[in-house]
Amino acid sequence: MVKICLSFFCVILLSSCQEGIKDPLNWKLGDFSARTEEEKEISLTDLKGKVWVADFIFTNCATVCPPMTANMTKLQGMLKEEGLEVEIVSFSVDPSVDTPAKLKEYVMKFNGDLTNWHLLTGYSQEFIEEYALKNFKTIVKKPETDNQVIHGTSFYLINQEGNVVKDYDGITVPYDDMIRDISILTK
Image (cartoon, rainbow, N blue to C red; front, top):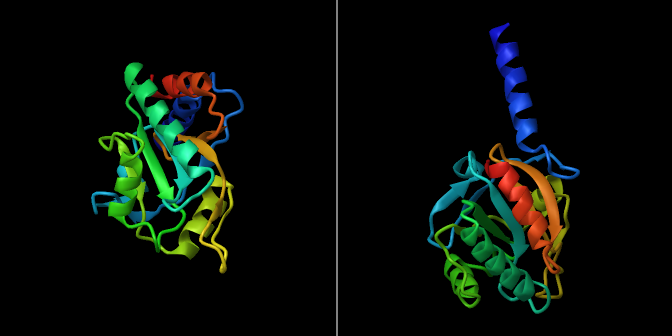
């Protein structure tokens, strides 16, 4: 009986944390294992208890990744101005090319602050393609005859329990909506 009451309380508490967020998604993420730009191992467990924003990028991208990364840098600055503690996680969609050092160099071109921005690689192409589709409901596909990886352009808001709460356009970012939703989660 105590377990049932405790479980019910946790569900109510988590749902109330998301109250006010329009049309929450509530997609539960599966675990992952990756290396950061600092060559450190990271997994979903390391992000539990934190609110984070994720996206999918690669360093040789000739189209959408530069504006997405610039937009993520802008969002990072806005979050700091608001005093919101949020982690940022960028998954490389081209892990055979994107080394930790290459990812770090790439984000530094956009003046990203690596104190709370984790650039992930160190997994297989097959893993990231399957992980993105299964967990974020987005495509990642590396063509055999082209170095430009096909991938989505969304920013994803993840809550403290590791659930995707919301997705946003990463090109024409609705910054005010994101800040509002992040504020709700971090209360």
